Image (cartoon, rainbow, N blue to C red; front, side, top):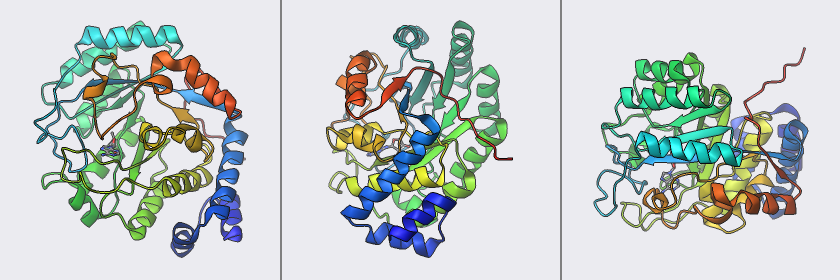
Length: 349
Ligand code: 5AD
């Protein structure tokens, strides 16, 4: 096991059979070792700096019906909302004043949020704040729409593939959604020039070690600039309400594996991990993550963007709690970095 970890650290890759050993036989002692190695790598590239992204949840209306997600169409028990352009701009203003230089606009797949409205919002933010990075996380769109979002001034796009296994994808999503379209989207985004993020939920219903290996290999070949990894957490109004949450140890192990395989990737310590347990955010960072995404949405709307139960959005998870976040990061030897934090590939000559 120790040799495998050393090899992953040195070569940034492992064959599938070795990944299987790592995923199935990693005990406490070796988890500690791989997390130390992952931190060593992130510190080499990013020092003790953690990038911050201001997360604006622009609406929870969604025409999709993903079985795991609390804002799925069939959930008739949530109050739906859609932020107006002015609300979004107010979030940006507050965020900019707090020091954020990346805004992430995330929302459900909402037909009423038309491309032209979105393009107008993106270009206004681009004009108002020429120095910020604009990240979108709005799901599957057609190629032309992505192109127009990019031309309007968006720089980055987050779209988790969720699972790279066809059957598993069908278990998590209703018919009408397909892995092939998800992958088409990811390829488009990269081709267009977006810094592109993808990723999975750890411990999603039906996920096996084989699936995880497929995911690791897909991410290795796709080489995303961002990798989002968080535990699956059940939501009481979904078909998966009684499924167990993803495991902490497995989530930390995967974070470390991704850090060792993708030394320069931007890897957030996710809200889901911070929701799983109070010190989750710190444990993510101490497993190789180098980004946090505090919530910049209007506080009175936050509870409505419930992808899973008890989603953290206050305290150190809130944009207005930046000081608290910084204190907590300092307590583990890290500090907030307020720069844009673009992906930067060091080339070896
Ligand atoms: N638990 C954890 N993560 C979830 N997401 C959606 N629902 C859940 C859940 N129940 C994640 C998905 C999606 C991202 C926006 O949130 O991976 O891509």
